[in-house]
Length: 212
Image (cartoon, rainbow, N blue to C red):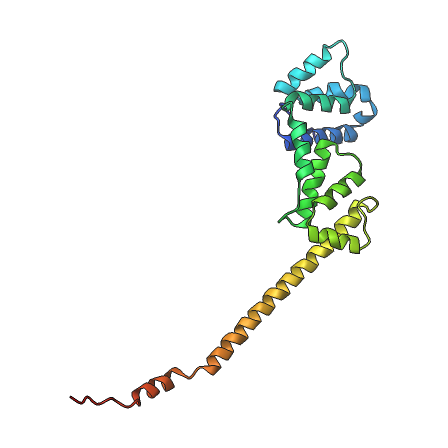
């Protein structure tokens, strides 16, 4: 089993989540997951700096944290700014699709949902529905989806279809506009006399005589 990369307490949420996931996979592959009382002490082998200092303080406490998930939460509270979770929740609640494609929007929203512990999947569905483009929201209702009952997979599937349809309509509209301009330019060339005829016409114009 591959050991997790050492974590030193940096307040980088991606680094922290990656460490926790790698540690969980390591415990599963080694079978330590079935010995829960050993997990926190084993995890300390992969801590350094501020993170390891927190482990030492916890171990010497009169009521040490022995549950792995509780230790993760306490470690995060120790290594990240006090208002970190509040700021992340605010970002999660304000997050919108805008110019993002559907897959990028949903993946980012899922990650933010995981960070803040935003509740069950239905909470994520409601949040994803509320943050996608207004024209998509209208079409979701037409497709008989509902933010209170539809699953995330159903929402994702329908949004991908809507996005492809929107792209097709946009490309078709641009192609039509281009073809119209080409036709108009061709019609303009046909209606105007050739340059050579205009030159001849000017050369044949009668000259005016000067009479003193």
